[in-house]
Image (cartoon, rainbow, N blue to C red; front, side):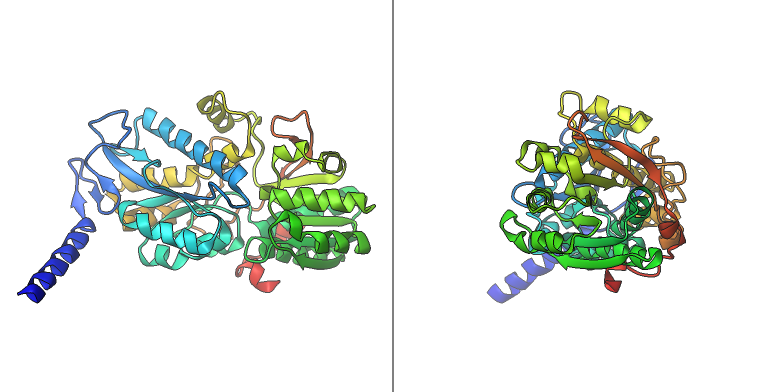
Amino acid sequence: MKKLAALTLVAALGLSACRGAETTTDSGGIKTDIGVTKEACPEAIDKTKGCIYLGIISDLTVGPFKALAVPITDAQKAFWKRVNQNGGIGGYEVDVTKYIRDNKYTPATHKEVYDEIKSNILALAQTLGSPTTAAIITDLKNNSVVAAPASWTSAWAFEDVIIESGANYCMESMNTLDYAVEKYKTKSVLSIHYAGDYGDDAAAGAKFGAEKLGLTFSHLKTDAGQDKQAGAIAEIVSKKPDLVILTTGPTEVATIVGGAYLGGYRGRFIGTSPSWNAALLQTAAGPALTALFEQSVPWNSWSTNSTGHTAMRNALTGKAPSEGYTAGWVWSYPLKAALEKAAANKDLTRAGLLAAVKSLESVDYEGMLPAGSGNFKAGAAGQFKSTGIYKVDPAGPTGVSQVKDLFTGPTAAAYKMEGACYLKL
């Protein structure tokens, strides 16, 4: 009898779990399944509306990108609050606060916390990191969980469930080299980068660009940590390349640039987008960064005059400017567009949301990215390829000011995406 009772309990639990995935139809004729409830969100503005639950997995405490990840997450909270204030989507409001988790920027933790929340969410409003997101990509695909990545690896161009924004690291490095050759007459480039599909992707783009432009190329992988950059510094000082592309976290940038400068290096550094943080100006490396460092970016900075930038600043009144806010806000537009299309299609199931993503030919970024951005229907062929260049500027709201507006260099323009770049490094 005990065995029978146990089996009955297991069966009941299994049925209960299955019922959570059943498709239902609301009073407006919209189909729903996982992560959408007729009950209002915990912090609902309109208690008569149901709730769409989105998860956020970010680097919130101890990882190398926590200084960016916290404002990224705060910006997404503000973005979806604005959506709710404007009436929500399809008779629902959106909650991105109940299922926030910290990945500590480790793939194992990322997967662990994803497994905790995946049965309660329709989609992921944020999955921070390339290697961390890679740890859950198979499950995302198997369960049709759409996810907005807080990363720019070129692998995302080939994943239907991933709704990325901005140029990937590979294109970014190609644009960086076109810029450097034009402005600085660069003839040699060294890529210093993390291992994995963040650093390797940028290095692969630099390698391809260097080959096309006839530049001398070399690269060196480095680990995270202020105390692990002696090899990178020695490589720069000994080789004296015209340009160093840094694809690390901000801590490593300050250590490498400051150390190379003390060692006599006077070439140029250009860091990929996540490598900069305005707090670096307060470190001992501040003068060296101001003299030698520039940043490549996938969209324009906090103070830009666009409808989206203005809405972001208004929603974050009182917050100290940070490009983390800019990133979190921009990354939210494709998921909003997909949810709106799914609601219009009367299908807010996971499958319905994925179908909506695959039909999007453009996303309205309210001017934060150009018209025509967000062509997910075209897959890899629809990849956005433009990059901007900013210089360190202590007078800038986020410690930088624009050098070159968004552009697509001839190298990136001619490159055909046939697979993730980092696989070719």
